[in-house]
Image 1: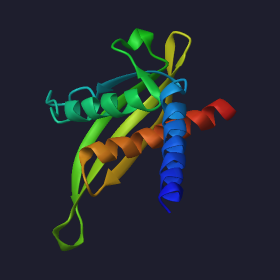
Image 2: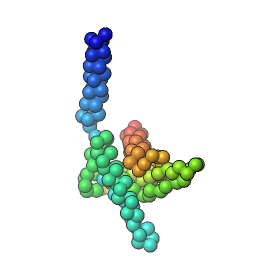
Image 3: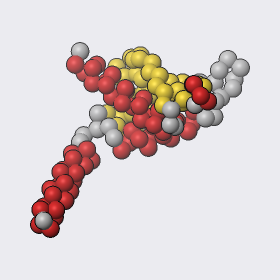
Image 4: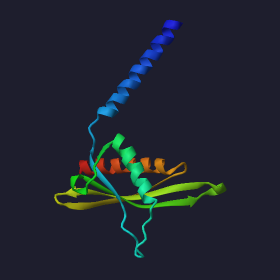
Length: 144
């Protein structure tokens, strides 16, 4: 019984290690620059957008993208447009994060798509959901 348990734990550890190694050593989809939207007509900046930029840098950098510090070095431009809290039933709140993604086309940016995702748990999870949709969109563009 003890040998069977040790074998099962060892096999499980090997599978998890293999999956983790594939994710760690997978080539990034491309280089991404993340910024916030320009100030609104009144000149006001939503300072909370910078928090989502940090979340996207943290999550995207360890998943599918190489995050770069200059728009000139990027293949993709992600602009955080808004962060909104929606009130749901029974007093629950949902976090809605909206971004736009553009692709480099020579020296110019080819407009892509606007993505809006919400999550009931928190802003970091909403950022993760947005990045998943961005990845899907990029993969679909590469098939065209």
